Amino acid sequence: MLGELEKMQKAKVYSHAQLKINFPDGVRIEAKFLPNETIQSVKDLVLSTFLPEYSISQFDVYISPPRRVLETNKSLKNEGLVPAAKVHVSWKSGPMQGSPGFYIQPRFFQSLSIASVTSAFPDSVGLNDTKNSQTKGKTLSQEGSDGNISKEEELMQRMLGKRKGLGLGLGKKKGSSATNESKGTTGKPTWFKG
Image (cartoon, rainbow, N blue to C red; front, top):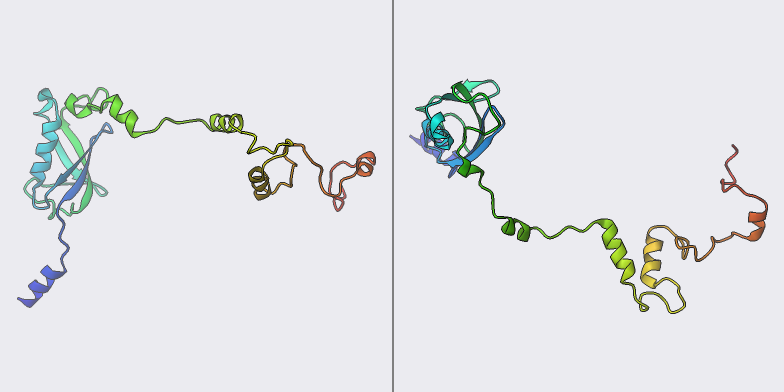
């Protein structure tokens, strides 16, 4: 008696079982069931999704690997499908040809209205569009009155490893002089002997 009580106390209790039911043509249905419902209720759900002309189709519901056909009188809990599982449908006779999902009632493929979808997601803007709009929108307060770059732009260049004025051709590197340029240096480091 005590052993059974301890087992019951340690047992995990789930409120539902989440099943992903996969058809051979790639269509998938996701549904929630109570853990004590039988495999027959899963088969009934699958049958209710078919068009009337395919509702007499014969099929098995199985899990894999290894492939094991589920018995219709056993509960989801007894078959080990709680809290979640992926099950597959195998046709004995019935839909085998056509486009994916041709045997499923069209009401399951109805989509949301376009207005509700577009309101859920903001309009996208390309990266180049944002860069152009930022440079077009610069004012004199961002750019110095003498045409130099702003402190914010200078800080960004320093963070990216550039020295002041380098990226825009406004200044020269430290230590560069006209004598180095007249000597015809190739821009190679002095330690490179190649």
